[in-house]
Image: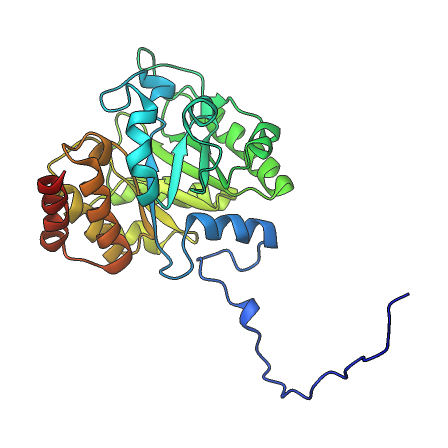
Length: 292
């Protein structure tokens, strides 16, 4: 029985009618359970409401692509500057130190290579394995308007159910059919579909009229970095995306294929979290390049 000696009465407090714990910084997530909110907060930082995700999952269909030949060498200098790491379970187990505190979003879809049609993906990692690996989120590609649209959407729906059961958020990686332009019409369609199906975060490409995409999606959007482009162009794209409603970026090749990856991720971080203008952020990259 608890010792009641020295018990102090609760102090009088005023009723404010409001609790700080009820506020949540992530769009469309205030109703989620504590575990989901906690994992979402690891991915999207509470102090800025933004995130710089580092995507290094390309090998699941491309193999040892340029910049990712030896994962330990690529990841070691970048991990301290990434808010979140998106990768496969094989690379997590083989190439990321167990003491790493960077939250993980696990790539859980796949089933084809770059040699075949890329719309033919299915679930390739169990939620049980994601729990074992202590991930903060699970990423799954959906292909709207592609040959295997139904297959990817049906598997995605199953993952959503499993994610809610385990308390792990799901990130939808949106792609559209080869005959569909990456424009606001189709990207808003795929993003909204993903959210309607239960996605907690949506990854999609930047496009003209991007505010239509972010404005009609009820959950956070992160911008996909896409193919390697000049550093200033990548920083400008990131700046425009967050200015127009994205909560951050999930950038890969424009960081690890840069001639100064650390300088580039630092520059992207300044743009995303502190609204640094692209030209000023480019100087961060250039200064790091000179000193390295």
